[in-house]
Each structure stands twice: as C-alpha cells, then as structure tokens.
Length: 124
Image 1 (tube, rainbow, N blue to C red):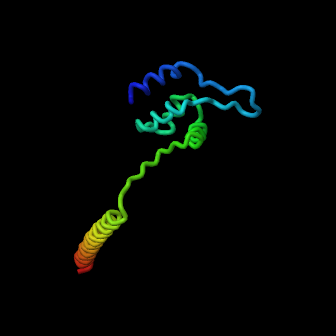
Image 2 (spheres, helix red, strand yellow):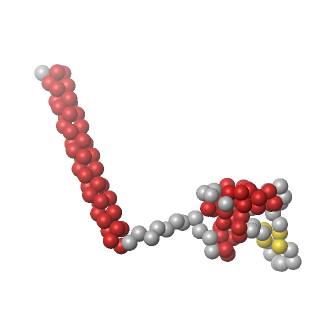
C-alpha cells in the first residue's frame, strides 16, 4: 500500500495541482481519491496533506467530504463490552479521585501543622 502511495505521489509531487477549468468562481483543484485515501490511511495530518498537495486545508476537507473519506476510526465494540469498559473507567477514575483528595488533604494538614509550628516559634 505504501508503494502505491509513493507511485501516486511521484505523479503529482513535482507539479502544481491541476485545476478544473471552464467553471465560474474560484478554481477547483484536483486531488485524486486514491492519493487522499492513502495519505489519510497512513496517518498524515490534514495540514501535512494540504502541504503535500499544495492546496488549502479547507480544500482537503472539501475533497474528503466529496469522496466520503474520514479521519475518524470506529470500532465494532459490542454494547456489553462498551458497558464493561465504561464501568472500569468509572471505577479507576473514582479511585484516582479518592487518592488525589487524600493527598491534598494530607498536604493541607501538613501545611497547617507547619504554619502552627511557625506561629509558636515566632510568638511563643
């Protein structure tokens, strides 16, 4: 797959993007669906793709919509597995929150004891 991407990039890499002529308004640049799809699949960012293609980021998004491409990756997790994972995250978060709360309380108690010792030392 990476080789087909490289081959496509060599076709378009050294040239300015092709414009579709004969239409009114701003020029429409052509980005082949195969090239855009491969770049997205290989993990390139929209900014990188726009730089490689010599077009704006909005043009990349526009072509992605036109071709039905997306950077989102969805899984086929079942509802049961999703519920179990959500429960695990909730439990882990509550344990983490409890540890942070205890550490903060201990820190405040230590700070209070230090302040009390300092007051006794100064005025004592």
